[in-house]
Structure formats: structure tokens, C-alpha cells
Length: 109
Image 1 (cartoon, rainbow, N blue to C red):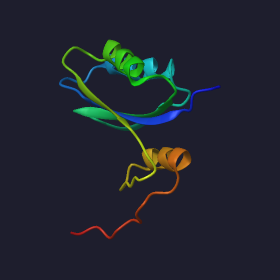
Image 2 (cartoon, helix red, strand yellow):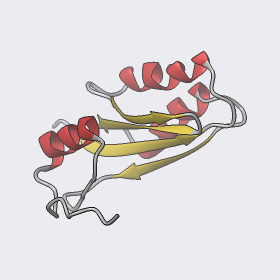
Image 3 (cartoon, one colour):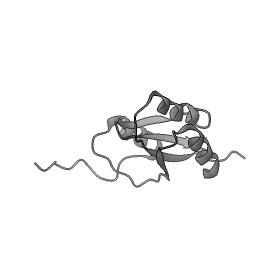
């Protein structure tokens, strides 16, 4: 019996941007069929991915790929979600989890 794929969001807080941060996505590709960058900025990034491995295996893979001064959070995702902007992330979430739980509200100025 196959284990079900579980959707996750990895958030990485970085101190100093470096090309080596690409190792994280490379590491996730070894355990996930479809890791998708959710966002990148100078102080961090997020990656959405599905995985059938135990969380400790995911943690070890991420731990080995981040830089020594990075911090990270791995969150299991569920059917209740919402987003504003971040179109690639919304597309991934819609595909894997279904429609968002709220409609786009008018932004206040």
C-alpha cells in the first residue's frame, strides 16, 4: 500500500542571500515529485511540496541543505487556506488542495 502524499510549506529565513540556497530546492526534488517555489525575497523564501516521507526525513534533508545561519519552518498544509497575490503559490495550492477558502477582498488604501 502506497503512502499518501502530504502537502507541505517550507519557510526559510536567511541571513545572507547566497547561490547556495538553491541546494534546498535541489534537496527537496530528491524526495518530492513537484517542489514549487512559493516566493523569494532577500530575507527568505518559501517552497511548496508534496512528500510521502516522515517529517523527520524531510527535516534531515532540509537541515543538510540550508546554510548554518539559516532558520526554517516546515508546515503540513490542509484544505483551509487563502492567499493574496503570490500567483504561483496560489496555483499550486489550488491544484493540490482545492479552491481557496476566501475570495479576494478589496484592498484598503
